[in-house]
Length: 469
Image (cartoon, rainbow, N blue to C red; front, side):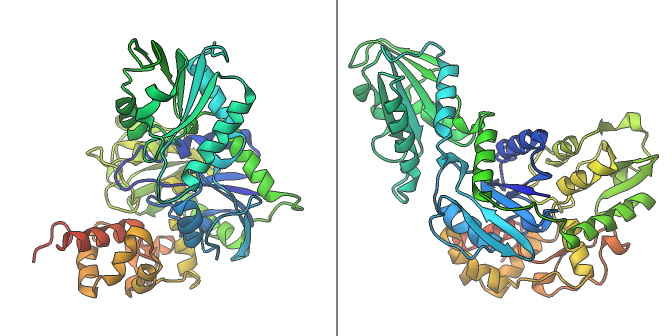
């Protein structure tokens, strides 16, 4: 048995941020090469501190879904996963045994040599008849003066494509370092120019910043008065959204696995946790805001406040992914980065098989089943706020200076709407939902949303939103 984990950044504000990782997980599930494919996030759930608990196998491969090496892949992700590794990741990856699981952590997908073919595929989509006689290629990266690895991957791909002889010119340009993308008219001589953004997903930079800096008006823009004569620019979609990235991810995973012997085993504690959930589902019961009802071999999930409503009155979904999509936003359409907030929208029902139930519940309440079971077995370790704060780096280092009063002020705003009980703050939880208390979920550690709000409070030198004094 093997588990594949895709790690994305996610967002507390933008519900579309995780979309690319979702899509790749779905593509890889369809391939059937791993027993499970799950996602973990820095700023969504399941969080990096939780995600390994949600894997069913003792053989786990973790792929950072980032476009280049840098702070997140070398510092944040290894730290939060507990890998005991900081700094550049070797080509073969990093392997550790954590809690009975063999965990292999790889380089980010963007640095794999296979991404050169993805750039080429994007270029051919934008201009099918691109030729070495009259077509230049611009590989466009974000760049940063803070980490040279950010541009190293852009130059490597540009060099490989230049050597291929498929284009008359190949240039590496950047948004935030030299050579800047705005200088392209002075650098590029060919009459036809294909621009391929080396970005992980569609977003503000690919939709707004790049077109503005280059003067683009859409997928095809003509420039009649450029320094080297008339030129036409063909703007491609970002490489990170191409389906071929799924093949790159699989190559990374298998290369990290190397000559490993047999597959892993079923992780016993994880299996026991989900057996407890199935036992609850078979007799029917509540889990947070969700009512689970058995019906002739399938299970219906709905908001508990919709109990008694007929099926025709509710929007019906029949896949775990459909359930995920109808519950990612609250009734007002706002993104729900914390799934255990009492903001679950109403008006839907999910009908799932017993096999699908596990993934559906995982999408609804990531890591809650595993953590609740561990809490009931007295094996869930709590991390006090002081420890969480000391672990923070980068822009979050300042939370180490927060006073206990400031932390509690933030908690009154951030934690009050949540179903979880703050074990990390010394609160007690005698029984969980698995033992018959529907809204009783454990919280072993302050979430990244809480950490971010503490930082915002310190920056603004004011109490948390909604508080006085």
